[in-house]
Amino acid sequence: MTDDDQLLHPHEPAASYLARPDQVGRVCLLYSGGLDTSVMLKWIQDEYEAEVVALTINLGQPGEDYDVVREKALRLGAVDARVIDAREEFARDFIVPAIKANAIYGLNYPLFTALGRPLIAKIAVEIARETGCDTIAHGCTGKGNDQVRIDGTVATLAPELKIIAPVRDWKMGRDEEIAYAREHNIPVKGGTETAPYSIDDNLWGRSSEGRWIEELDHAPDDDVFQLVTRPEEAPDEAEVVTIGFEAGVPVSVNGQAMDIVSLIETVAELGMKHGVGIVDHIEDRIVGLKVRDIYEVPAAAILLPAHAELERLVGTIHQNRFKPGIDQQWAYLVYAGLWWEPLRSDLDAYIDEVNRFVTGTIGMKLYKGMARVVTRESPNAVYDAQLATFSESGGLFSQQASPGFIELWSLQSRLAWRLRNEDRG
Image 1 (tube, rainbow, N blue to C red):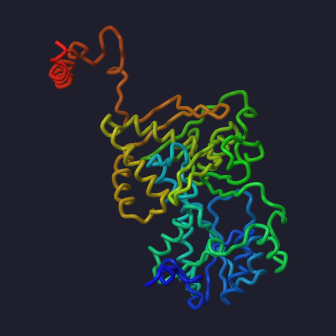
Image 2 (spheres, rainbow, N blue to C red):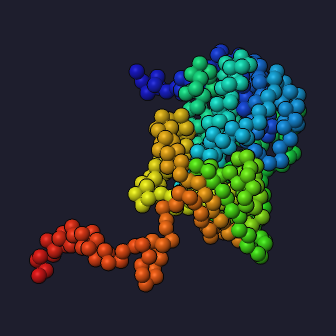
């Protein structure tokens, strides 16, 4: 066999779950209403001679008119157009586990996109089966992690379904897409001018990519911040917000009980007001690229540190040294598109057990871009004010016992130091 024989043919699928043209009859298209997916909706009909079911999923993206999005899909030829409100499921089954896991990737990315993609793909599988589709289509590129998260989920949950990813395969740039849209009378959201940034957002955060963001020596331009007030323009007076938790789940703000979606939205508004949650981030993608993103994550920037502080308050020193490693592994699996990996649910079992005792309140002071813990309270706190006191009596803590403890605690270290320094006299 020659080297040429080993090369894939131009349209040969590189993976078993990718669709060949003759396998595509009805496609469930993950549809946002933007340029890429609107062009895809028409392109799939023409190139595959296939029917298209458009699927739009609400994960809390601000400012969307879903009636308009649905009507646009139908005008472009979709045989059906579904809009699914998945905010509660997203918050309950994806964001809450992330809070319990103190989930951060690469120091400061709270995984909002990574958490949303497996849910989007799961719903796509459900709708594809319900509407008789044989294929799922998405608008991911070949440079990002989202293709891994969506392809992996579909291949895991529905091996009978195939996948097409036109943006990953076709050679159209944005100018070519706009030309295609004009030729086929496809309305382009926001007009035909080049959008300033590539945006992805949901209930847990917002990312911006493109333009100057790719230039590491370029400080953020003000127009990138569409959620969070710039810190220098935030109020001059600080505000303390108290977050109540039950078994690791945030349940109240300033003493007022709320459902999880309303709570996240309320905390996000407070963070936005005070300039909290701006992240300028260099990220190591699993596809091998190192990229820069600008994130706006006001709710996560308040709720994650509040939860972590309460967890430390109720945990022992040994739990508090051990769990961050579990949290880091959990976050990596989610980031890497392995939501359905059994290890992730195995880790959940430990994380949930720890969080059984994470009940109480944390006060967070918000001021010009900062959110810091100022008050703590929990019935399960491994803390006793009398034990912690440094009064002359020593409280309930026996200071006289300390020398004996020190002698035993340092015994091995002292012996080892002497043995290894004998030649020094």
